[in-house]
Image 1 (cartoon, helix red, strand yellow):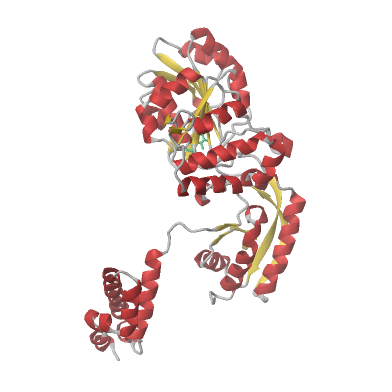
Image 2: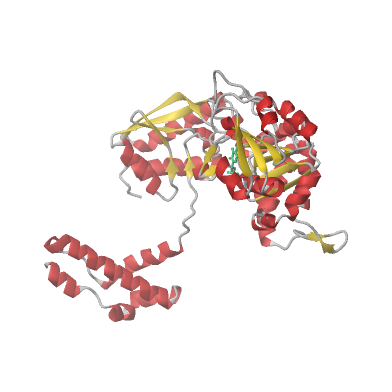
Amino acid sequence: MGKSENLRSLPKVDAVLEAPVVQELTGRYPRDLVVDGVRSVIDAWRREILEDGDASGGRDLSIEKLARDLQGWLEAKFEPSLKKVINATGVVIHTNLGRSLLSASAIKAAVLAASSYSNLEFNLETGERGSRHSHIERILCELTGAEAAMAVNNNAAAVLLALSAMAAGKEAIVSRGELVEIGGSFRVPDVMRQSGAVLKEIGTTNKTYASDYRVAVTEETALLMKVHPSNFRIVGFTHEAALAELVELGREISIPVMQDLGSGVLVDLRRFGLPYEPTVQESIEAGVDIVTFSGDKLLGGPQAGIIVGRKEYIDKMKKHPLARAIRLDKMTIAALETTLKEYLDLEKVVTTNPTLRMITEDKASVKRRADRLAKRIAGVAGGLADISVDREVARVGGGSLPLAEIPTAVVVVRPRISCAALEAGLLAGGSPVVVRVKDDALLIDPRTIQPDEEKELVEAFRIALSGGDA
Ligand SMILES: *Cc1c(COP(=O)(O)O)cnc(C)c1O
């Protein structure tokens, strides 16, 4: 059969819909969708025949084949686009893979909030309207020592709200060394412009002194702002004004000091052998008026932007029209409240909070898991790849702890097929696996692989190495 004959033999929509195999699908799916699907499959077949030309002989154009393609088309329609993936990269706060995982209790709280009515904005003591801020404000104050607190959609929104409420139409003074880009189009100068605050840059890229802030202050100044260099470090011949100096200046001239801490940690990470990262408590203790930070970076909670500090400014922010536009939903509030309450027990939070657990897991423990995983992958590789275990360094990611190199162990997979082919095969499977590629090998870091994912991971390797046969 040639091209034109094939085109003439394409099934007709009406005839297809009459066929019992397709009628069976009409019983399970909406009829309109089935009709769309039949058209779409026939169109696809027509395109293939036109592309293949006379080489398209021997093509199966039966109704049975069409019903099979149609079923695939219908199933794909209902398949979620947002899928679970296995993070084998060792990057704990991987922004592209959803940053932090929630603790078991935080997941439970979010599910409860989603599946039942709640006192989201209802005061159970008075039986009257309550505030959604109430669920997280007290615990945030307790953990950070702040006077007041609130949370919004993310830290970018927190910075926007704080600037809008405190400095719109006025000047905010920022060091040139802190006009940073965080990624995903969050640039401090752009956010400032959006808020209506006028950016007044001072100092230089590598050195800014407290005196630079002092001489820049005018009648128009509304805010002294500091931004934490979350995702980079300036080293060498550098100076930045100490928080205490800025706070002192702010007090003297009655102008508030705001700090965007970015990641925002509540525990001193040096306890776990990690580099120093300023804590939220330290900033509040130093007298900073407003501190903002993310919920899903090192805090290890849901996506959120947390604002803590002086009540007079937080009250202004709660009443600002923008607050409503960037408010948190109930599932996030539930997850955030639980995440925060777990910090009341600092010994335990390191095991219950997945982000903290993963960045603090010791090398020996990761090595044990890597050894076990290597054996299992070798077991299914059947000589199609060389498998070994090696030392490596893991990164925290998500614009947090840019210099931290966490010693880790990885499974090194050198496939007979190309690395690119194996990598693509691992992404195409039912449980996509994201790996690191280095020097013609795939690196699998157990640090970010969850305990219940090992079996799926091994199965994904079996399928991908054997060329995709399930
Ligand atoms: C990450 C980060 C932000 C943005 O926070 P999101 O929660 O991702 O919106 C803003 N400022 C700094 C310093 C950051 O590190």
